[in-house]
Image (cartoon, rainbow, N blue to C red; front, side, top):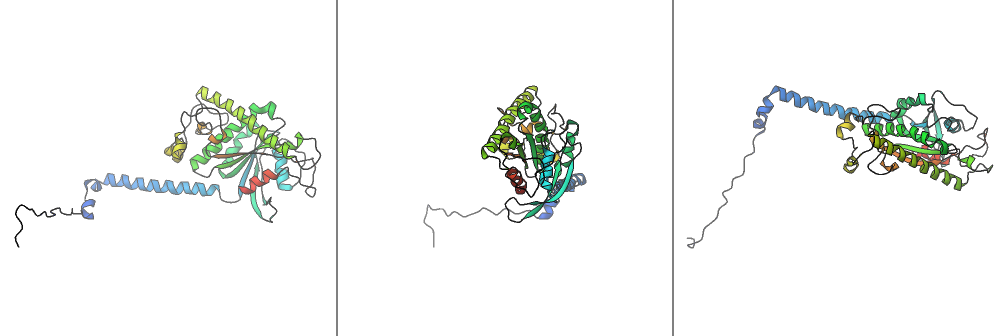
Length: 327
């Protein structure tokens, strides 16, 4: 059958591209260079090693019983709190000059009969002993920063200067190990002394006042400290790009190998710690800007000295016990 004149039959003349065999790819000049092959192989081995190393660091930090650190200025009541939690009794104590460490079965505050092992470490608040924190921070899941709420007004600047390097250390530890944020409870302790009531129960109004007071005063002092550090060029960040990207502002390699120094550090801060992790961007200080640390505020009180465990417990440690149990 003949085709009508003027019509053209189109045929598909495109050919399927040939796929190069694997042997030809392996014959690429680069893959024939022993130096290139050795370098590529070494890079792969290094990446695998670093991945396994960092996984091991994260696992070791959380292995064993839950570790809780008691830190804060001297005479804030840390040792009395330690004794009350461990031995369920409140005795008069003196300023500690060495850490107190114990592991004990911690009872659930919800009266459900459950217990879990807690390793509680009371670190001295003396300025010469502040480096003790760095010995235990890697294993800590939570930190209680204990503040004497009655003495805070006259000692607020010193308390903030104690708190800042602790947050720097905790923040750098969490960021460089890519671990879960360390939980920190800033505790307005001795709240029972704000009320004249002889009851074991601390009025809720006193607890609320203490929490608000410690947060307000320390926010003001941390804001002042941030302004001083930023003005001197030692701290603060212009932009918090790391947070937007979902990583630390120190960048990938800072997280992988450790953050670099930002210059003059806070007292007690290691040269390799990045102070800017706690200051956030421009503007006033905000607790939410502290990277790698989850900060909450609480209030507590121990009641009369010498109270035995068989006597009425009261509500003075309810927030502390809930915090420790939920870690």
